[in-house]
Length: 446
Image (cartoon, rainbow, N blue to C red; front, side, top):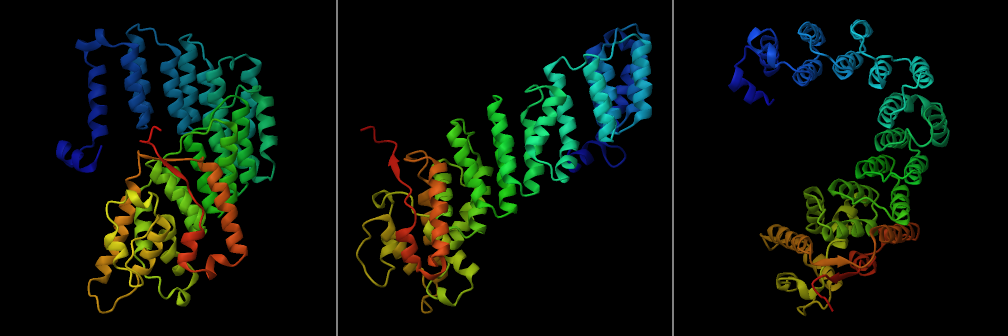
């Protein structure tokens, strides 16, 4: 509950949790409502109390309900056991388990899963797991995946820290749980996160490949986890290879705004002109361009580029990247370009295509000491260009897939970098020779 709301409701004397806890305790101790207590209401109360670390009161309510001759099922006990597990409280776990056995409630997979959560040493966890398998307690696919998820959550970092491979870990999990019973998106995401943190992107991609092989489609959250680690290790190639791999599988998850923001950051930080253009344009076409991306492109467009040779490499990049990225619609689709080409001191002729438009824009944004409103004019022109790009959705569509375009853009950027074109060529040259992102008018049904 927000702090200000809590203050208005309860003042400074007690918290929302304290008020609800007191209400639960009074209700379960009120003889007038005893006939209305059910297992469902008990489980709701137990879940709240366990969530807020009040296992003692939860256990008291369990005993109170038991005295009412209400048949308590294993799920009620498992709620308490999970609370003890989260706190790694073996004492309370043992007490609750004794209550369970005394009342002849049979422990199930959830009971022993909670025990695995309670135990910290991995070796003991694995011993409990093997005992569960021997006693047939992991017959349920849901139980299997739940146990595997907890094993992977804490076991993956230890396993991979020894330098062992993803394929070895997958083989070990197959032997423990049976192939493919243990596999789920949560476990795969954890492995991708651990491997990605170590910069082992090829092995992280292998985990996703295993997901596909076993009939699971990686969720966009897992893809984003992979891409985040690509940015941390400045590994544009791994990000491109992942998208190409997903495209080849034919079941690529729909990228969200977070995906495009990560890809944009990756291209921007790596000073990849062509990748930045592709990511920006597809983000606009798909309606995924975030406010942060728009601000970066706008600020870049409005920067002066007349004295680029005197600027450090990073400042040169910031002054040119946005001008190369923007300019999606054909020239005929702009609301007005007069304020752009008329500001060009070299020629008053209207531009005939978007490339010319952006080249004129680059020249128009030079310094003009006699014009007191030059900065305001540059900001206006920059916002105008970004606004035109943002208007392309849903009308304009891309003719080629994102993965293929990014792969081509990455290769062009590598060529520009090795050939000296990235830093040596003019802004106008880059605008003209940058990768072409073909689009078509979605309203045209011909």
